[in-house]
Amino acid sequence: MLEHAKPDQLVELVLPYLWAALVDGRVPANVCVDACMTLRNAYGQLGARAELLPVDLAVQHKDGGGTRYGSLTPSWTGTSWNGHCVLVLPDSERFVDATVEQFEEVRDIGMGPMVGKVALSIDGDGSLMEPGSQVVLQRGDLVLTYTVAGPEVVASIVEHPEAVAHADGHRRTGVNVASFALVALRGEGVHGRAMQAPHPRLRALLRAVGDAPYEADEAGDVRFCLPDQDGRERWLRLDEIPLPPSVPAAYPRS
Image (cartoon, rainbow, N blue to C red):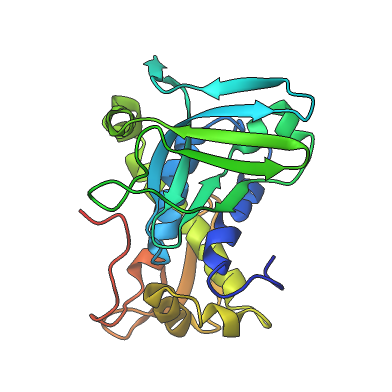
């Protein structure tokens, strides 16, 4: 993927696969809310806007049979959310299902997260797809039809005490995923294309980091050895790296 992806695909494609590799065997595959909240922050750190999108998913086999997952009216049971959600990237018109392999028939194909280019129908605020809109994607012999739930479902996720309680953790983990992605994108054979990506923040981070050493501690926090605001060399997290004032802020923005 790193070798062949075009500049406008690098961030969008690499992050969900990197997230899946980093959490492999350590968290359940069906934590779609955690995955989306984490990846929303990871995309945002690199300058790509990502929005949570609750969906109903129908997986259809070539013989006509199939299974429906998620719901257009999902709900919480204690700390578990009974539904399915994905991310939409409005600026690049991409659709990301990082946890699609929680569904056995999709997992059996073994192709990892689902990332599709779609013609988005967005609502008045220019962010989310309209309720009832459908995205149809192919995975092997399967046809996956995603139907978008309403904006009130998004609010029911992000405003729920469980999501609020883990918001700092989602941001921290997102910063770490973005940090590992930055390390990959500065590599030989990739850096030139990454510098052509349509994300000014990503380009500024690549210039700032250069070939600086990095390390990950036992908690998984990634830091780069770089000068701070006062010019003193320190181990800085990605969100602590000084950038010129003209560089766009990370998403999500309040």
